[in-house]
Image (cartoon, rainbow over all chains, first blue to last red):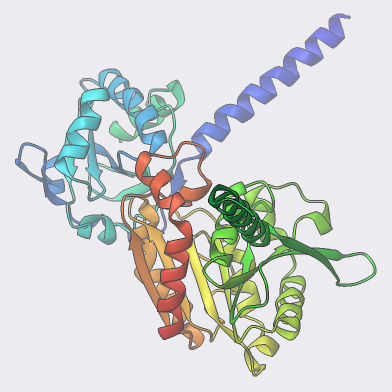
Length: 171
Length: 257
């Protein structure tokens, strides 16, 4: 019986390991043009933001929309990620996909966020970034180069993800 | 001598009978079977009497989405004849949208050719939404179909999803291999509230590669495959109610591309 319990335990460990790999596996190494296209956009309050202002930080750039149900689900995990990464050179910048200010404001009343929401009113920025799905995520290194992409929603504050972002922020 | 009341009652009854007959005629559907080979038989449901314009409608989940058959009945009253080939049952595939993309191209082409050969319509259009656009794109890529002196006048694709894999952020979308091998006109309608709308210029450029004339348009206020969704918004419900009008208007446009 002891051997069987051991075997089941080992199998469970392998399965857990595979699951953890699957979560990490959702991040894809980016092999395209390594320099991130520019972002020069206003936030909801009209303040202008430039991606170059975030140099020296690992940056999660996310393109999202209010009609995207997974975006709604994962945004609270991004808030928690910011807390977990406090004191580290890490920032989140999100870009709304050409919706109206009213639509975005209403969404943010329901799902408050602790990171900038930039308004790409004519969709030109998301075109430059080649975004055709939501949420579309890019992870930039401290020099502003895209190193990972990720399509779809995940638990951004998982230990696995925090570990990876921590490691990047220490490079 | 019959009283005026009797005549009124008689006229009323005849009116009701006429309406019931018309309603029945509009609802009537014919089931036929096309034998592809010894193992594969494809059921085709036809709505309406022979008409000048026919529509070959590839549905994602044949029979599961009542809205497609309801819309077909409304299109019949606008003078169309509609054919629904059931591509899934022949392969014992469940009615999942992803399964429609697994149908062999040769079968799709055989079905289209059979309807072209047997229909008395002067012109035929292909119609599909979401993942069901895959068999349409595969059918249009067939060289024999392209060379036929055909009544086939083009394809109307409503929020098509013909990706080979989900689009990676930072990369151009990759479509199924047959994309861009067509010569027939194609009209693509996409929801305004979906990220796929940003891929329309790339999709149109890809579809045009072998000579298809391609036009794209947005449907305001709706998400992708809005008429198949369980969680429709009020705007999407309204647009679904008007699906026959949307199809009718855009087939007119497609005919003029």
